[in-house]
Amino acid sequence: MLTPHELAQLFVIVHAPETANAASPEIEALVEHDLVQRVARAGDGIEVRVTPAGEKILTRLARDIRRSPALPAKHTR
Image: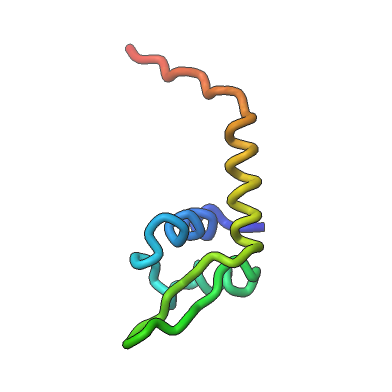
């Protein structure tokens, strides 16, 4: 089971991988779950990429979000 922080980090890696901190505990957990991998970049640094298993999780989440009923509108005073 992923924590909310790990799930958020997975979305960050998909949409802005250059901003992901490859040394963060959330990335480490995602690596352990085989949802992302660290890859050496040309030059210096490490790039974090989503694995096929991570893509599968994101695809299922997107499908479930599209199928869920709309959230009720917030009441304003």
